[in-house]
Image (cartoon, rainbow, N blue to C red; front, side, top):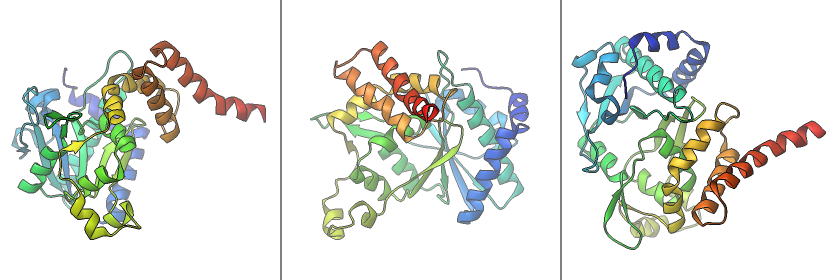
Length: 291
């Protein structure tokens, strides 16, 4: 994948859409009184050349994480910045521009990888954090203890996981110390996955007993979860086509997921699934016109 030119990102920062997202992001920082930001970067997209797009360039300090799977050509990296400094704020603004660029040019027929992945506020880079990031990327195969990797850091995969993770699986992530995970969604907006506390996940349970029974990572997914993860490429292809026409919300996302399940269960064809999705998403608008 060719790395974008700095001029492209500069032009994007001058747009109203970017300024709207930047304002919302700074409001999030202010409302939550965040002091630092750690961003997860996938070096498999551009390698360390991605840092040449930033003012700090090759002098930007970053930490590599443990390679999640041998099939990856490069590592995940973590960069940390202080939000109280002009240098940190400039870095945040440039990373936001790159994230929006990658989402904007992720179009039907020409999918664009993501180098800017997850945004973790007030999560300093520690060995514990690096190990947690490694653990979340692991899952046991169906009925075995053989590990498979989970490319969760890609915002498109994270969006899918937010819909299929069980309360217990979200709690497994929470127990790692990750309470909020931010990412750029399909609508080019910063969204947040707030992991439930034990009391929120199991309000009527004996919390200490429940936590004692909580299995450590890697994840163990159900057959249906694996089926949906196996259809991630098709789901993303459909969402790339839809995002230019509609807002991708919970309803539209679940509509696409339901059709993906019917495909894998041989209850419909891909062609019919697309027709079903279009008809389902157009129905509310048609009903609204008729009133």
